[in-house]
Image 1 (cartoon, rainbow, N blue to C red):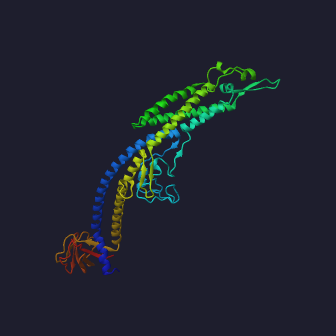
Image 2 (spheres, rainbow, N blue to C red):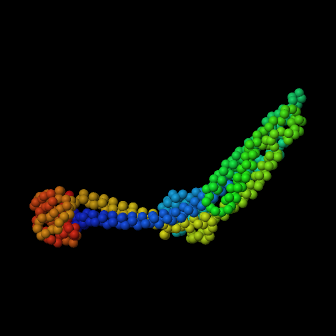
Image 3 (cartoon, rainbow, N blue to C red):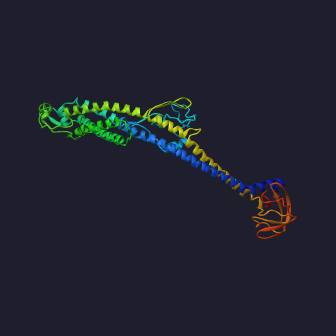
Length: 432
């Protein structure tokens, strides 16, 4: 059995729910309108960030094929994850189990985002990963293979064979030179991979809209270099030295034979091209580093120095992700506000539904007029002869008895004062 005060409070909660929900809906609408404006601001800031990233990507792609530095590509989802402070995000590290050079305890505590990983093309652990198949590495390996081949007899490198002196009556025999053949195969693979690396660089250079004149120089260098590699690859792997004794084989004048990959003159020509290209690789790698730039931050996350496109991007990222006023941060927080209001509305409706299990309540649809006639919103569950209560938010509870009931009203005694109005949430109720 509920007390009088409990009945008043519970029914007040029930009849006020409609207004509470309406106010929440109005607030949601206002917040959604504000959210749309915030989205427009962030979309503009995103467009600025995207333009900077578009400048960065071709340089990173070129550098990846050139030196094997595996730059990370920044995606919009990475930025959204940072805005939501998702566990493991790249701009506000938040994992104690993942200590970082910039953040030994794994948790970034500054308002500005971290620019030690994806912001500057590094991985989550703030270092560059490495791809083994790159031009610089392939060139170095090719030069070593050439040096090893030049230590072998030219008859062997030209023919791919070697002669084994027989012990009479066993004659001399020509057999495959496994060392030479392994070196030729290794060199071929590295040169073929180098061509792939060069084509990847050309694709990146062609996609680069920067007006830096060094881009055209880099293209020209590659276009002049590719035919030199292809010329060597087009040579036959081996040519045959006429069979005979080891004395004949080992002293055979290879210059009388067609060219092959193992001819010293061709190996030296390839060696010269590779060494010249190594100088171009160093020059171009330094140019790429300069264009991409660097970012440094003080212990509070403020940018101390910034250069190149990474410096530009760091500013654009801070505009979107700053914990205090970043456009994406504010937009996402507003979205959380809408979600919170939605939950508040759900709780209000769930509470009303739960309380109605205890009390049957119906609001007036017309002011009381000093008689016993009370027009109700839902009179269905009220019955003649039943003892019920009438109350308003600013009027006391009155016990009454139902004398008559229709589909729209009940008549009770005693009569109800005109002070009991719709506007002060007059309701009729009974405990179930």
